[in-house]
Image 1 (cartoon, rainbow, N blue to C red):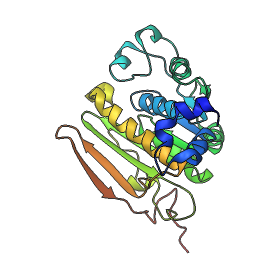
Image 2 (tube, rainbow, N blue to C red):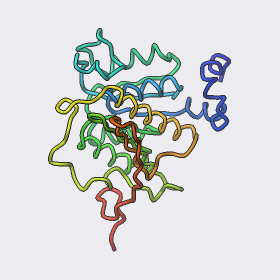
Image 3 (cartoon, helix red, strand yellow):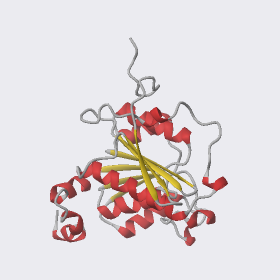
Image 4 (cartoon, helix red, strand yellow):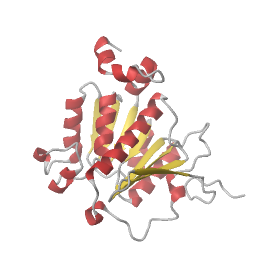
Length: 253
């Protein structure tokens, strides 16, 4: 780490549980961010600013005027551009020292597994259950840590699924929370969302990713953090692995 980097990241390095060693781990890490909307915007910006060495950005959509109320990584001049291109420009301007890869397509099947396998942490900033289930499956199969977030209206939730052997080896996966894809799935395009709510949830996701990559603090594993922004209250639910989970459940003998 050179003097320029020591100065850039000095406020993080000053944290006793981060120090230079934790910052170096961040700079050598690879994060996969799936979705560059309301959640992915703050996630990508904070991970870039924090010095995560390599970010892979995934989205297959283009910037729309209706996105700009909450998707702060994009600007008015980016309308009709691929979100991956718009986001990459913003991040390079924010921190030209990191490496940014873009995948302007929907990742499925083996392509998704390959992308997940190459990452040290995956941040799920998608907006539908089918995608979340597919990401979770790939993370469980490759034993890659997953930071999951969701937000709608004035509500949001975040959890971490380590998917790695060790202290949290008995933690559930995302699929343990749901028996199946709900028949009716709320979207912000249909029900609305308050812009700062996705910012809060995305910022928590970024914090959890940084903690996982640097070794700072205790991850939000086995716990679901729920925000009700209408009263600005957080509550926490303890999660347990579902032995019948089709993804991580232990095989029955």
